[in-house]
Amino acid sequence: MGSPPGLAGATFSAGTRLDAWSRLRRSDVDLLVIGAGITGAAVAYCAAARGSRVALVDKADFAGGTSSRSSRLIHGGLRYLLHGQVRLVTHSLQEQVRLSRLAPHLVRPQAFLLPLYRDAPVPPVLTRALMFFYHTLRPLNGRLTFQRLDPAATLAQERLLRREGLLGGLLYYEYVTHDARLVLETVLAAVDHGALALNYVGFVDFLTSRGRVVGGILQDQLTGEVLDLRARAVVNAAGPWSDLLVRPLAAGRRHLRLSKGSHILIPRARLPLAHGITLLARDGRGLMARPDGDVVFVGPTETEYDGDPSAVAADEDDRDYLLAVIRGYFPEANLGPADVVGMMVGLRPLYDQSSRPAGEISRAYETVWGPPGLLSVLGGKLTLHRRAAEDALRFLERECGWSADGGVAEPLPGARWRGAPDVLAEELRRAGARPESVSHLLQTYGSRAALFLDLLRAAPGSAGAIVGGLPYIWAEASFAREHEMAIRPEDFLHRRSDLALQAAAAGRTVPDQLAQQWTAAGKVAARRTS
Image (tube, rainbow, N blue to C red; front, side, top):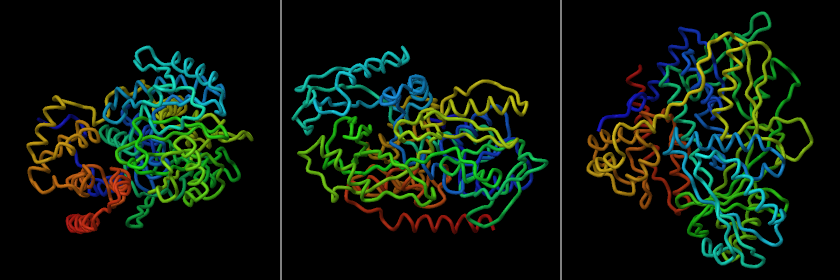
């Protein structure tokens, strides 16, 4: 079986990064995008696909901020209907269907159960009405429905649920994803169209001329080298850092309110869920508990945050709040602080200047132009990233006189199949991968899993498990370095994969050999480029 078309067979490594930096030294670009989270990646992709010369940079790794610390939902937002945000929900439901077609290996339906209790903060009759309305907003071709369950049927779905006051439940479907990998494949799609994408490149300051932004000063975080890059326009997609980024140009201007969202991670062995569970806290906040492999995500919290975005951290109050919510639904599980194997925290950049609670603020995005040459894309959520990017490009086309070619509707790199998945699965098994690893590779990399064939044939030992009992194989570490620009071990452990998270949930540790392998590979790369 041959490699899929486009970038799927290309190298995207530390060497690629070095080459891209050299090219930026020699030439200007049409568009400089600052911030390689989901919004910045999507803007770079849409612009490159329309023929623009694009540079995408981030001071950390791709998806190194909020875009790797989300609830991993591509969801419509049932709770937003409580606040009358019908348009936002409609657009989100449309994007669910769109993304599931463009990246079916990354955006998949998952069943969710919403238990209904007599003492719920939202009356059950209202919840049922909202669920019905929610599904009338779904696209007709979405094919997802919901079921009403009586108490016995609800407990048959999740036996550990609290029985006292249970009136029944609603079984419905949302889409889930791996947020960091969705960002990565969007970056790869941008590079496939000629964009230059570099992680660990910081933005130092704007270049200006006659009151207009004409580029930026960039610094390689690995070498310290600085360059001036001129661009016809700059997009600020820095997420929680967006206000800080433009402060030198507009002192005192503030568009964002930051909301801290924390999750706790519980071993699935301690909370053996069969479905995602939609939770309503006593204070009315909507949360979820969602199984993923050997771990269950519980969260997120939603609290105002006024500090340095780089210093945000989860704390015991966050942990205890989430434990109290989950114990209220699953008292028999008897969960306590010792069952929390990890915490994840991110900042939602909310575009709002009101005094409303963070949970009531719309997750819609806004584009802010100014000073001339600078477009800031603010707010938004994971589900709506493509709409945000397309709107940003339409604005730039009007403002800068660029030609418009419409949206990008091609599959992401991992969804570009030339043959049948079951044929690739059999070839991977013949190359030495265990059945559980074959399933993992196909679900994680999609059609790009074909690239593992040469790796496994060249080094049969690379099919071995990095951590016993988990499906991750040593070839993935090499693949992350050579094809996914993983510069540091943590890029692979926390963003290209969930190895660190799943190992913690299973009570295992990642061997030191992984970091040693990374160091050895870096020394070889340095000799090649010296």
